[in-house]
Amino acid sequence: MRLSDSVAALRPRSPWEAMDFGMLLAQRHAGLLMLAWAIPALPLLALLSLLLWESPAWALLIFWWLKPLGERLPLFILSRALFGETPRLGESLRALPGLLRTEWLASLTRRRLNPTRSFDLPVLLLEGLGDKELQQRRAVLAARRGKRGAGWLTLVGLHLELALWLGLLAFLYLLLPAQAGIELDWQQLLEDTPPDRLWLEHLTNGLYALVLMIWEPLYVAGGFGLYLNRRVHLEAWDLEAAFQRLRRRLGSATGILLLATGLVLAQLPGPAMAEPTASQPSQTLGRQAARADIRAMLGQPPFSRREETTRWRFGDPAQVSDIESQPAVSADFIQRLAQALEMLLWLAVGSGAMLLAWRYRAWLAVFTGRRAPAGRRVPPRPPGHSAPRPAASPTLPADIATQAERLWAEDPGQALALLYRGLLERLREDYQLPLSEADTEGEILRRIRRLERPELQHLAETLIRHWQNFAYGRHLPPAAVKDELLSAWRARFGSGSSA
View 1 (cartoon, rainbow, N blue to C red):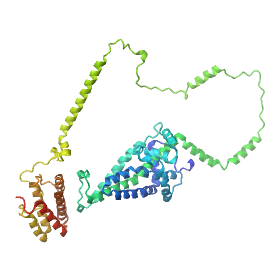
View 2 (view 1 turned 30 degrees about the horizontal axis):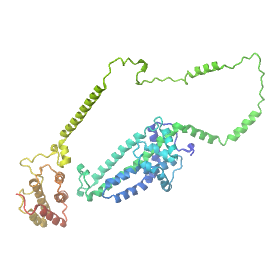
View 3 (view 1 turned 90 degrees about the vertical axis):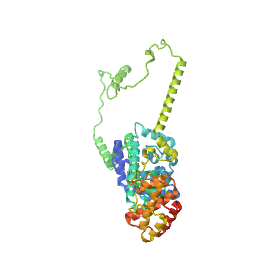
View 4 (view 1 turned 90 degrees about the horizontal axis):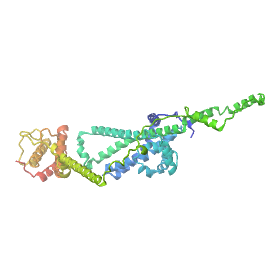
């Protein structure tokens, strides 16, 4: 490695300027860096998704935990590109196994959550040191706040990843058609995902990988810039690079300069030696006088530096007042006082716990009894208000299922409307659900889920989904849906209506 071959100016920079320098270097090779990261990472995510199809969250967690291994190949490319030797994609992929073998276990265990990982990675991969030398080298580079900026890079990168991922998730949700029947419900995020929605979670995992494909090369480049800046400060790379360029520039003219210098010196007369005179005084100094001159010189700038430091310290034992003359407090009294203070502290802790339990008793009831908190319960249905229903006659037939089966041949929409109105009536009468005119289909489904009745929930979801498709898009349900809905209705409610 010759510093004079660098494609950028190596000079001392501030930490923020050093990170910007690394990211500008990554911008020049953005396509190569993103491909080098994506080719190993995306097949790995696909493999994890296939193996853990029923657990998308575990697949994403494992993929996130293996992130440090994916940062090594972009660093390899950047270290070569800095000195004008940018490797090709195939050459970079062939170097990947050797890069992964170096300290892979420590990178995934004790150093996985290290906030200065981007700064330590170049020391590990590029300097090729052993364990003891590696620790000493890290200590040298980290001295005097040498890692300043690496922790901020990790913190900002974490929030940037989250912001970009949530933005892509919101954009994906906006692109989903209404016929898909997918509603954004934060309560459902804490529950198990239905089997027919697993593909959506795996798709969100793919969006996270897309965010990392853009950000990870920039994160590695920022840490690489901090590492280069630290070495420039410690080893004066800027001066060394300037001397190397000067030597290369003057290398071809060195012989001519030496020959010309020799010819000039050959024409000069010999030196004339003067005889010392006896009257010349001696210039030698004694040992004491030399020491005095040295002390006087060291006491002047720039050798002398005065610094004032203010700190707290214990008093000088020689100046302590006569404490022994004061009456000593008995050890028994101190022990009793400590026990009393301990008892008061425990009483305060217990009182605080009881106060918190009483303050949030409604929320505790949710986790123990699985019922809605009292502060968020829907008020009782006022007189004259009814649940949202399709526009039709308020009276219901005695046999809703049979009447809906007759209407299905003539008008499937009227049949769905009848079943929907019957479902809402049964929810009010049989399950005492406080429905109101302002309730939407999604709110009705959420209240049905709280009943924890899978058969009723499946019937309501199927019926409401087909009713929405007909009401908003005029899409008639398939013929097979009729038998499914009617059989589920008769199995759940029988044939008669509520009176």
